[in-house]
Structure formats: C-alpha cells, structure tokens
Image 1: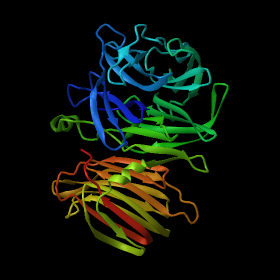
Image 2: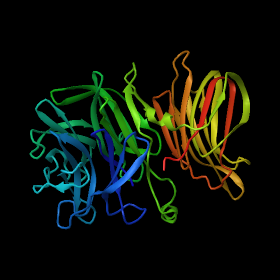
Image 3: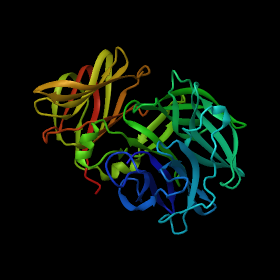
Image 4: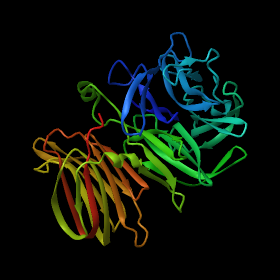
Length: 445
C-alpha cells in the first residue's frame, strides 16, 4: 500500500481507501484498497473499491484522490492514468448506492482531461482534493509548471462533473520546493487556510511541506510555512470528521531495499491518524487521535529526577506509547533510545541538544559485529524560554513516530532483526526529567 485516499466519515464509520497493488508487495497495478473503522484504531478490510478498467481512462492505474458527500451520495474523485509510463493523467469520479461497498464509475469520465496550458507540460497532473463553499465545489490538483517548479491548480464546479479552471493556487520554486507537487490538501483551520503538499524531487525522495495563510477571491497568500514531517511520512490526506476535527492519515514509506520487501511479502503502512491544529504562531500542530489511549496496556511511570547519564528502564517492548517531558539546561541534552538491543548493537536514539536547539535522530544497526549509524536526521526545534521539551513517541515494530511539542514530526522506519531489540533507555546531561510515562500497546488485530 501507499497513499491514503478517499478519507471520509459516513454514517458514523470511518472509511479509508488507499493505493494498493493486490498482486504483490512492490508498486504497480494500482487499485484502491478499502478499510473501515468505528474508532480510527480497529480496522476491518472491505472489498477492493476501484480497479483499472481496460480501455478506460484509468486502464493503467487508479491513482490518488478524495471522497465527498454529494447531497447524500458518496462520491470518489481520483486520477486515472493511461500509457506505459502513466503519462496520460485525467480526473475521474465514481459513486456508490450501497453504503460505500461497491462503486460505479461515471460514464462521462474523465471529468477533467487537460493540463492547464500555462504549465507547459502534459503530465504530472493528479491527486484531486475537493471541498464545497456555498454553491460551488472546488478542487485542487497537484502538478508542476515546466522549468518553474511544483504547482497546485484550482478548479470549481456546480455539479462535480463539469469543471472550470481558475488559476494556480500556489506555485513553488524548483530549486527550493521540488519539481512536482503531489497530493495537495487545502482546508480552513480557525481563521486561516492551510495548504499541505508532498514535494516530489523526481526521484524516490520527497518531503511534506505546509503553508499557512489567507484565502480570498480564489487566491491563496501564504504568511508562514513549515515541514510537516522530516522523514518517512508522505502523501498525507486529511478530512473533517463529524465532530469537526481535521484528521490526517499518512503513508509511511519503506526504507529497506525492494528485495527485502519482496521477501517480507508486504510493503507500506499507514501512520496512526493525527488531529491537526494551529498554534499561536500559525505553526501546524499534530497529535495522535485520542482513541489511541483507549487501548493502552500496562503502564510504567518515572517521576521527576535529575539526569546525568543513561539508565535501562524496566519496560520492554516493540509496541509502545511514550510521553516524556524534559527541562534541559541551556547546554544540556536529553533523549530516549528505543528498540535497543541488550548489547547496544542496534537502537534508535532520539536526542535533543539544547545548545544548538536541534533534534537528532540516529538509527544504529549492526554491521559485521560493529554498531554503525545507518541513518541520521538533524532537525531544528526551537524551544521558547521556559518551554519544556515534550516527546510523544509511538513504537510499532518497524515504525517509530516521533512528535515533539506537537509541532515537529519525524517518522522513522527501523527494522529490528533480533527479539531482544526491545529495551528502552532514558538518558540526559544537565537535564531534569519532569515525567515519563510508557504504555505497552496490544495488537489491534
């Protein structure tokens, strides 16, 4: 699986569709898988929602898109592709009359078939995100302007089948924010509007950026920007649930080689859903959905203590929910090691250095009997005067989701090969630990 698609809450149930190859663990022959949940935690697989139609506008693949409630009828809006390299990308729709179980594609597909002339190219035109304002439906599409950079194009419609192109919502700089912008999300939070894009550099690398600003007369003016995740999370998709929360899913990419994915028999997972918000500085905030707390198992607590060294904690596990609060001195440091082997030949080190105000994530793996750094990330994270360092860490086998002060996200993939890679170690230098709570987490299956 890869990109989350078609996120919607329908008659109280959460429906998540996703890019899926039913014939193997590597990318190709893209369909839409479908899963359903009552609480965003426990999921049930439903039948395949969309498959390529031979001879149709999606014969080469059913690419990413969204879902809307069209006056009581659920509708999927997605990108269909044709051509050996998926070079023909058009926008299509499908509807359901049986509670989202089966889907019928619109006879008039595609509903949008031409890239705006100003883009200077004829492909890379995909991933519709649709919302309604007043009498109009609006759509943003991820794309690029040749030799300029990534772009998001804006459309509107009164009926979801006939669309009028308006203008670029935002255009990037090819040197700073990638060649192509994919999977746009555009929505209102409070009195501000947020644009999330997945910046694709034309290779396997990419990152997720966000812009916060004002939107009027079909024009978006960003006033601030940031990085949504600094590592493996990509192609996020958000939706407004029945309670008014903006909930976001995200695909967590693999970092192991393709042969290892094939050997494992699976590839790609979805992140724990997150609730989005804005802080007083218009920075995007994220926190795991509250329902995650409902399945917490045995709890472990460490109270206030001074840290000047490392200690192995009593808790062990490869599925943990961790909340930690630190008060480091001006030149102090603090952190946790998770998925740590007893001989420290492998672990993920989550470190905050107060002097440089940087978060450093190191993945250490064994190599011919030696512990070596396989991957390192250094990320700026500035704490305000008197602000505590607050870590939320979700460990789940090969996934470690790290959210710092609800505004800095680093999602890492770690592949522990030993059963004893389950220690948690607490460490610090000139730091006061205010509290540490760890819950052992059960399987949801």
